[in-house]
Image 1: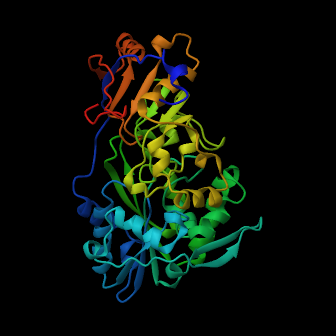
Image 2 (image 1 turned 60 degrees about the vertical axis):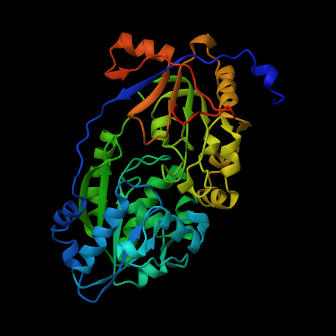
Image 3 (image 1 turned 120 degrees about the vertical axis):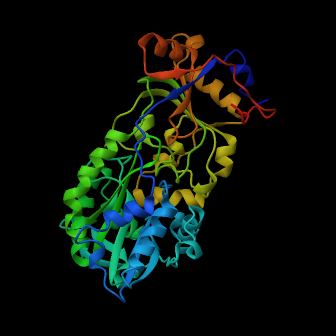
Length: 425
């Protein structure tokens, strides 16, 4: 029993209902064929010449169908008679080490023997220029030495700023291929200026580096691949914003705007750069992005294995479980803060022994007028919103307002002997 047991002893948990949401699920069934068709666009694959050495970028996110996307791209590039190698394009992720970045790709299923291309991982960069405000512009030396660079990434809203381009191909070029030093330079003047710096650095790199084209993907609300498209290098800055708008339209959301306690079962770098997507939770690491629900208290319970100990985003929560903190690797997490200059997301919040205590503490401190009617939402993670759990107060509200969801029967919470969530709940 913790020293807080007496304080929490009278806090009760409201019954919960499982809620199933339905979103449009248009998706691509045949990834290799979709890529083949996209690459028929003039100015893309046809620019690759026999004998060239081509660098194919792959990032650290858990992009849906990532191994299939990479494998198909490798095959298409080789079909032109070129050699191809995979290069980690993830800024400071993986602990900002060559081994860490390669391990992240292996953990995402990007294995050389399956992809048909080796992984060339190095943190060495070359400065190719300087912005008018003095910021240096870097790019991976390995990529710069290649005859051609092909960008591969998912397009989606960023978690800390708003701009013409956010998370996508241009960011992959400027921050991803910039490795730790490039990411550091892009973040040096804070996220307040990120939208401008990404465009300025991207423009310079498109002139200085042998970027040929980018292959982008947009995902739907179920995290399925919705669209695949190829953009010639000279059209990246003009066309990526159109796909970003589509990505925003397809994003899922929590079907309530006011939440007393938001519970997230797991966070991780494979889910979002911030561990969980602030566009879903409403908890942003900077004041330069907004949207999502109003949340009084947010709690986090676990860290995904694929995050390799990187618990970036933990600091945006109010209360967390001891097991999450124990899985956190400072060596993996702190490079994110030191590179991005945003330290809040790596701070360790109030930490309690188990899920039961974490949730009761959140209820007690959420400032709800009636704690017996606490508005609680529980998610597995921010990529899984088709099935969520809501407390009785929210379930009743949804029923009255005819929100288009399927609401299950009210249930009691189920915990194991350690007072953590049991697997079936």
